[in-house]
Image 1 (cartoon, rainbow, N blue to C red):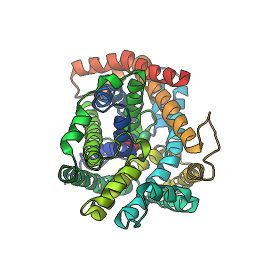
Image 2 (image 1 turned 90 degrees about the vertical axis):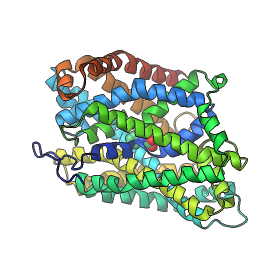
Image 3 (image 1 turned 180 degrees about the vertical axis):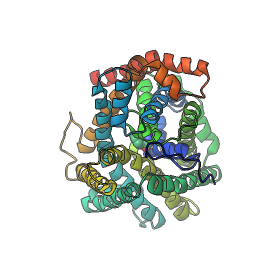
Image 4 (image 1 turned 60 degrees about the vertical axis):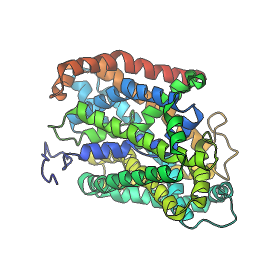
Length: 452
Ligand code: PHE
């Protein structure tokens, strides 16, 4: 529709469509974290109380850091490594702040490596849900899938290949084109799933479970889990949002777009809960089933449901689409850096970095079977170790450093300048949060995770 709102500044790339930043950032944010992670965490952490605390974390920590990332990225119009460096040098600080960008690139590749293995399982489940094997329970089915390294490797390879193809096609020809196609599909499929839950599920009980807060279940862990989830879900602390922000046209308002992205991310997580829990309750399944909630519990419901062999594949297609639009944002920051520094072409960068993530991912493939007894960090297997390293270590530190930098080291005038169009009162509130609230809360999570 909106063909030509783009402008080329210093030969840097800008999203073409007015809504592309929102679609791309929401595409990054909405992923396995929302549709697979959020419902099972809400399920195990006491429903509505978790949802409420999660919303608080989004507002107090997520939103201010998201605004800071977009602002730093768009100011420099460079990949996160160079965007951090530019912002630091322009504020009279050391260029070593670029280390925050480097940390982001590393977490992006690490997350992609296991994200792709789980996304591969989602792809495989599109077929499994369409043609369920008779006489096999959904738990047995999950065990068959995960016991086979070659099967997991096959789907992991397909998923990484899709990422390489999209990223090589460029920011506009690849990412923008894909999110404009995928995001509306995702939304429509989500609505279909919620309507399905209204027809085939116990909707009232699902609503009650998600929204009636049960504070007896709440302790320090709930708060910290909710914070970690908010971080991962909004794709913060590792450069994805900063990188997408660097393609944002100058005239867009950073506050409004951040609010929209955070709102869409939360909406989709809640809709995912509304699509899943009514079905879980109607079929007498356990809401606190944990990570197997969608693959084991939900599959068994689809098998018994009228039109389940259509609804089931649609659900796993939804999950795969969400995962794909997130995964491309994990690869883009490092590819953008390689291209910007003219180290190699975009295609070679996408291929090399994608293959790198693919190789590390083999460890996660084996974590489900041959290596399931081998511990890496503490008693965690390979997949859980990488997950732990990236999500509970690199991302919170990255986010906290962005907050500390934006609150304490970046010249306020530079931020104010980039936030043009934002009400002064909102700017002041942002400054207060990014200085005092967000870094302290993230530090609390971080310290807690280290000592627990
Ligand atoms: N936000 C994505 C999700 O919820 C995961 C992600 C994290 C994507 C970090 C990009 C960067 O699944």
